[in-house]
Image (cartoon, rainbow over all chains, first blue to last red; front, side):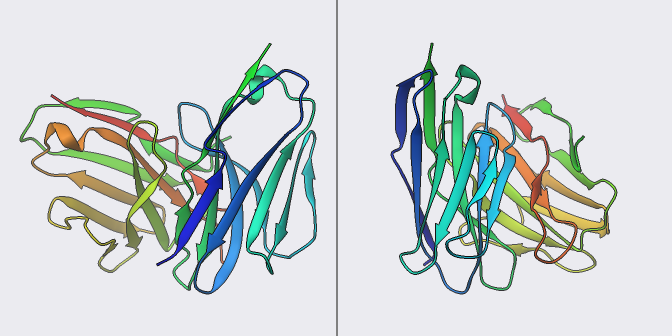
Length: 111
Length: 115
């Protein structure tokens, strides 16, 4: 059974801190790993990773994939209160384009 | 702007009635769309894969007679919750992608409350 596990499930930090969110997976026929940010509505796309070792960056957010160890991390530097959200990791596996989601990490940034 | 649109964003219905939720891909055609359900403080759970012109593929444990999916065109999939019960109250989200290997976009989601 395909499985995606995120850690930690919950994280509270102060504004300005740097955070690292983890996502590990066990799936059949890995195709891609995606990160989404969710704030009280549908998830918004952050990154899609397909190749190992290549960092993707968008402003203060960055992510990298390790296909050998089957995990990905999402880094957020100089956090702001607007970064508070649930961050979802999803893996596309098999040939059906389905996404298997992790439980999400609830990130809270305190001023 | 949104590339996948869902409607309605919120709906309240009475127990025993049916409610339809629409998912539209904007500016692209989608032969496949996906329907997810999300309960409060839980992650997204795939319910079914909607295939244009053919029957939907349902995940294990999802009742196909209760959650009717119709993908009648390349830009529209509908999810109908039939004989709704309070336990069907949830956040329903659809997703689609413009082409193989491309980014997967989500609709805005639909909050269903069954009273």
